[in-house]
Image 1 (cartoon, helix red, strand yellow):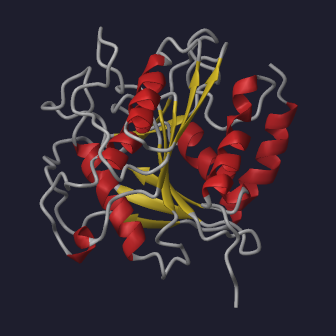
Image 2 (image 1 turned 180 degrees about the vertical axis):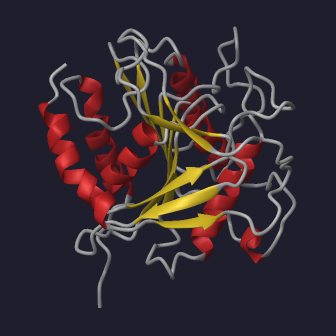
Length: 308
């Protein structure tokens, strides 16, 4: 695979993350809702080595696991580029781990490059014993709803437009952002403080190679998913050759959104596998970030901030 654009990307993007000290904030004061706290210490590990048939980025990257204290980590763009928009980033990992480098830090760098504040959500993983394999874990949605409310409650302090707060998620994180976008009518944990009175509805959602969206053996949405009135605009990207989360997950989500009258855009890349993240390459799937930025502009979420 041709790597020259990747080197250029990291030369441009990495300093933005290295020179600016990100802000790290705990999501919940005191006890975390529905948390047993019976995990070992939070830890970093490298992802397993996959084949090109399985994923686009085959080399191991950093992951996090054993997360029991969810946080948000805020990366701000350069002031001259800042559009006032913000996006909460949900890395994937099957609800077992968080692909923190590939689908967290690198995504924040890309968002900063287009003038968007990137906010990485460190949600709870791995699945707890009462969150069985094969279906989405429930605690991450609690964390995601709280993250949107927290960011919106402090938007003025962080120079963010409270009406331009979106989400982007990858793989299981793609499911998480869709679940957040479609479950804003009811909070999934008991309110703790004034932050939980602030809307947890994202203003737009970007979901890449999502899983858990299609029902098993049925051509319909997965149980527990519905598309209510008021669901925000959605951008979907998927690889046509994805054998980890097949493209039907995004296709049936797109059809459900369209039937509900919700603005949605779907991009399928014929020969792309899973886990392409935002890394530039010579593969067509790496162009999805440009299409996504164009979509955000067309939707009005990247409009230039009016300065006094």
